Length: 245
Image (cartoon, rainbow, N blue to C red):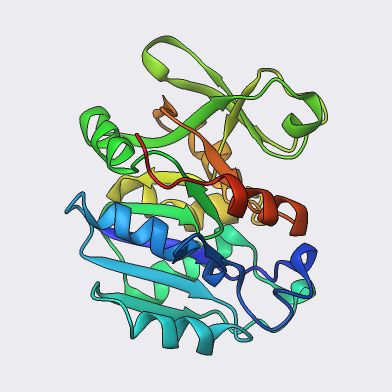
């Protein structure tokens, strides 16, 4: 299985830290954000290659970092040079699929979050369900619900509906940017784009996919730490204790 890591954003809210340096390579504790994610996933034994999708500006930083890792890591340059010209997460996923002729199951994750639980739990959950899968967590704050993917879940974790950044969120179940695509569903990304699914937020593809086939949502067993601005980065550095679940 391949793991696609979305890392082509420009993190403008973290300037000046990220003006010339990628957010996923910022340190939290003794590791970079990407190191926390990859070192954990690698323990599952499920992934044989990690594909980091970068923009042109930060590409050299990721290439240098990848050389220091023992895992097989491929870094792709999507060719964009500014926040205004970025492809968007869903088009970056399709770019990687086309560039590397990817055909199997894949784990797709954002490269700018850290978790206090192992993603092995999520991989095992998806393999048991044998469908594409997402994660969900309960978010009580309405202002947060407006800025993320929100899911409606039925019996046995089946996703009935998903919306991205809706002005009228229907539930309090938020979807963080961690996804498992079956091989068949990964091949539908191009169709989703052609049929008008959003391309900026990665969850937009799942919102379309759950209208086409079955998708399940695992309740997160721990917490996700999103690093969106300088204040949240300082908070994560102060509070994050690593993977404890």
